[in-house]
Image (cartoon, rainbow, N blue to C red; front, side):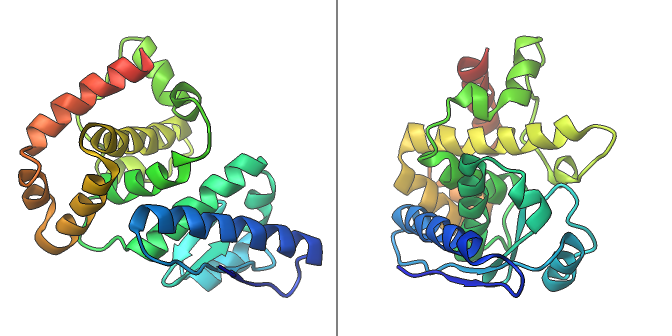
Length: 223
C-alpha cells in the first residue's frame, strides 16, 4: 500500500513520517473493512487553510478532518499529538473516508471510527476513556447513547465532547466483543442501507436493549 500525501510547505522528513503512518492507518482500516484502502492525505499550511480546504467554518480542537475521499490534516494541532495519538487520529479519519457516514446515527459512525482507531493502539480502556472513567467513578453513568448535540464542540465544557466520543467508542467496542467484529461491520453497513433500528433487529436487539447492555459494559469497564 502506498499513501498519497500532498503538501506545499511541510518538511520532507515530516511528510515521509506522515506517509508511513498513513500507510499503517490504511492497513488497519482495511483489516476491519475487509477491502483495500488507499489513503489520500492533504497537509495545508495552517489551520485556517485546512478549514478552507475542508469547507468547514472551524477546525478548532481538531487534528484532522475527513473531507470526501481524503483526510485533511490540521498542522498545528496534529503536531501537538503523541505518536500514538497521530496514528489514532489518522486511522479514525480514514475510517470515515473509507466507510462513509451518511444515514447513520452519530454515535455509530464516530464510535466505529474510534473502534478502528483504538483497535491496535495498545491503550488500556481506562486511559483511552479517561474523562468518562472519571465520571463513572464519581457515580455518574451515562443514561443514553450520545446524540448529535453531544458532539458539538464547547469551550465551556470540553470534557463533555471527549466523553461523547468515549461513550460512542465503548458502544461499538461492546458490540464487537459481544457479537464479533464482523457483526459490528455488518451492523454499520445494514444501518447505512436500512437504518439503525433494522440493523439492531438483525442482532436481536432494540435501541433500549442495546443502551441497557452498553451502560452495564461501561460500568464494568470503567468503575
